[in-house]
Amino acid sequence: MPDKIIRLMTCRKRLILVVAVLILSSIVVVNMLLVSAPVVIQIEGDTFRVIDIPYSYTTKDAYVLLVMGLVSGMAVSQLLFCLKVLQFEPEQTRSMVKTAPDTDTNDEPQNTEQSKVILRALEGDEKKTIEIMLENGGDILQNELVNSLDFSKAKVSRILMNLERRGIVSKSKYGLTNRISLADDIRGEKR
Image (cartoon, rainbow, N blue to C red; front, side, top):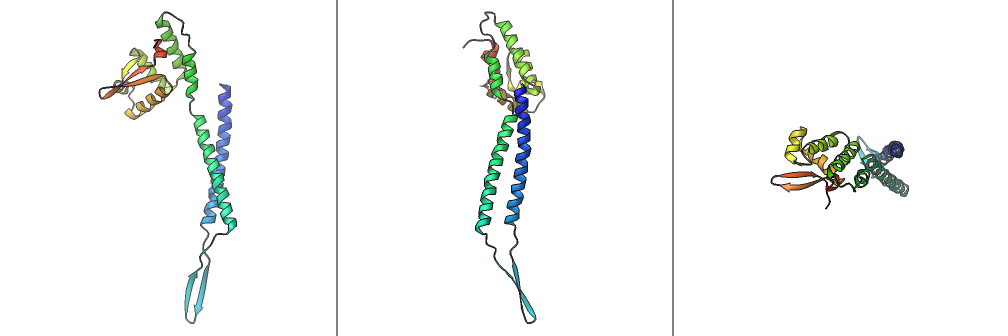
């Protein structure tokens, strides 16, 4: 756990630096692109004409724009990397599920032990979802889960998608809805 905290702290510092670099490079690029074209005022007798001289970028301008584009691209890639690091890592949950003892002959104690491990690893809405599933014997229809949680359908769908991606639940089509089941490993069942 301390390793994750250190990574988050360094990632936050990197995130601040990346945002600053993006802002500075954007300012440089915008200033270069918005250079006003020079104007010549030509006076002939009582009349005058304003003539716009087209601005042409120099080789130096092109190099500066190229370098700023590369710097911005690297900053955006670091930004995306940091945002991915800040998300929950599903490998930790999978390793907790796989390391649970699989040698018990009685499935009930193993089931409750694995359920406790899963519940400790989860937080907030995901934890509530698994608790309701455990109350219903590990199987529940998605529309019943929506009603039980009192969340929007979209939120329940996102929660289930995250849990399924981490191997905690599985979905199967059931009429117009889905049947949501705890993974066989968590239930203590053999395949």
